Length: 372
Image 1 (cartoon, rainbow, N blue to C red):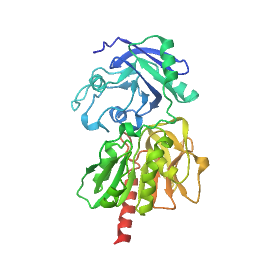
Image 2: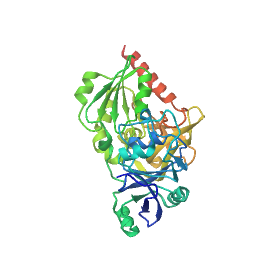
Image 3: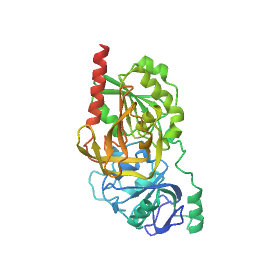
Image 4: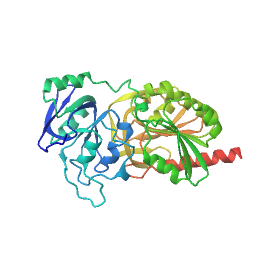
C-alpha cells in the first residue's frame, strides 16, 4: 500500500514515552530494541548491516534519504533493521548515480518507519534512561495499545539472532592470492569480505550453526575469522563456541570482529555484559594501547566484554574506548588470536583501523613460514 507523505504514525517506547509523526516506508507496525546511530552518511550501509537485525534504527543526522540508494552500497542481501526513525525524511533525492529513492527502497524491503519526530529529544531520553524496546505503527494509532506492545516485545538479552541472518550453505569467495581463510557468518558484512579478498584471501564462508569440522580439516585453512552479528553473545555461544575451540586447537591464527570478538573472549572463560546504551556511529575514539595512537572508529554493538572479568594470564587488552573505557580489542596469550569490538572495515566510516586486516595477514604469513 503506497503512503501519502501526510499519513500519521506513532512511536511508543516501553516506558510510556510516545511521539507522533508521519509514516515512511511500508504501512504497518513493527518493533524492537530502539537504538541510534550518529553517522552523518552511509544510511544504506547501516540499514543492511546484519548486526542491526531486530532493532529499530534512529538516525541522529536530521536529513535522511537525500542521496537516494545504490545497490552497490548494500552490506547484505536485504535490509536488516526492524524499523526506521528520522527527523526529516527526503522523499526525493539528488544523486545521478542513485538507483532510486529511499521510500521505494524501504517499501521494497517491507520496512515501517516514522519521520517528523524530535530525534534529538529521543536520543537524550535513551542516553539517560538506557536502551529499551519501542514500537512504530502507521496503522494502529492508539497510544496505550502501542506502549503495551513495546512492553511485551522480546528483550535483546538472551536472544539468539545470528541464525536469522546467516547464509544457509557454505560458500567460497575466490581471490587470486595464496591464502585461505575459513570465515564464520554470524552476520558478516560484504565490506569485510571485500577487505579479505583485496588482501589475497580466498574465503570459505560457513553458516553460523553446523558441524563443519571434517570439511575444515579437508580444506585446511591458513586462518579463521569470526564475524560480527546480532543478538546476545551468550545465546550465540551455545553452539558457536564449539567451532571457536576447534579453531584454537589447530594452532592457526584467529581474528574476530564484534560478535566474533565476544565469542573468542567467551571461549577463554571471560564473560560479556549488556551495555546501558551501546556504541553506534562512525566517530568513536579508540586508543591503540600498543602504539599509543588514537583511531576514529565505526562501531555497532550493544554488548561488550566485561572488563571486570579479565584474566591477565589469558588476554591482553590492546584497544580501549576513550569515551567510557570499555574494552575494544584483545590479544590472546594461549593461542595466536586477536579481536576487536569495533569495525575496522568501516562501512560507513573512517579507514583508520584497516591495518588490523594487515596484522591478521602477517599472522597468517608467519604461520605458513613455521609450517614450511
